[in-house]
Length: 82
Image (cartoon, rainbow, N blue to C red; front, side, top):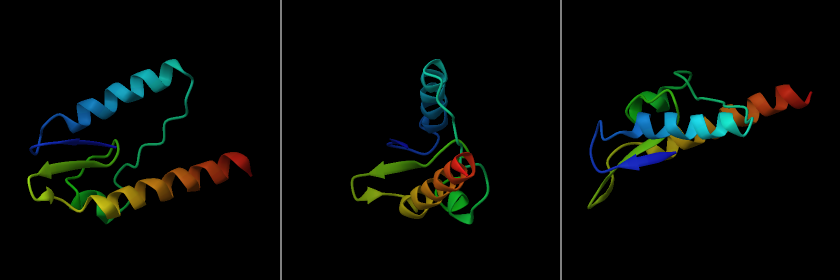
């Protein structure tokens, strides 16, 4: 997850940079993709949840996007374990 002060503030680039580091550690990367409508409501970032922060709080529906991302990670983990 990441955040920025404005839309198109580099959220996707930040997450992709984190992916690069994770790949160096041999991590299994589980992007959320476009599998849940909550992703579109938070700005449509397929790489992971990202929030636009303002003085009043978050400008988009980040909570549901984080839940969708967590659900995806749990689903993939269960498939790997089973």
